Structure formats: C-alpha cells, structure tokens
Image (tube, rainbow, N blue to C red; front, side, top):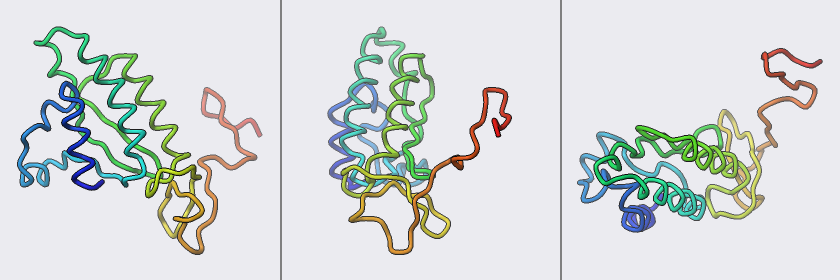
Length: 153
C-alpha cells in the first residue's frame, strides 16, 4: 500500500496502531510492520481499523497496548490481519474483513473475484485481472468438506 495511505490509517487509529506510530522505515523493513497489500483494500482496512480501534479504546489504558497488529498482508488473494491478542469480537471483525477482501479488487477497490494467474491467487476486478488468468475457488464445486474434514461426495 502506498505510504501516504498507510500513514492515514496509522494516524486515524492511534490505539490500534500505537506501536506503529513514529516508526523509522529501517525498523519497518526489518520487522515487516506495514500494510503489505494493494491500495484497493484501503477502504476495507479503514472500516476494520475503525472497529478494532473502538474495541481497543474500550479497554483501560494499561491494557490497550497488548492489542496490536503484527502482520497485515495479502496471501492467496485474501487479507491476512494478525494481532498480538484478539478478543472474540475482534476475531469476528477480522474474519469478516478477510472474507470480504476476496470480493474486492486489491488494486482499485472495485468488486472483484479470486483469479489464478500462474502460481498466484489474486483478488481482482475485470480491469486488473492479468491475461490468461482463470477464476479460482478454494474448493472444487463437487467437493464440500464436512465439519469432520471428510468430503460429502
């Protein structure tokens, strides 16, 4: 994500990104403490960050710093948002955002779908889907896992 957009998130949500405030870029590079995704997910991250900010802000000051993001990135076409600690409410918000990300183009933020391009899985709109990509879904239509992990077919 562009540094300007990263900085907007960090400034707007000081409880959530407390450990990211005033960071030097050498530290960012060493710890990979940054938004490792495209600009298209900015609005989604803004919404998620707002929810997490409110949840963290409800804790007493001395407890707030225990809740901090560690990794925010794209992996297999979806947002991955890891934290040092999470409450069930935080977990629900993060899971919701991670699921939504697969339907949002990581490049521009328009509606998108998961596409397989070479060995990569990407969340892309039609305008940003690389040539020779094909639609991708995590499970083949004929395979539907049950709770015990066995196929229903």
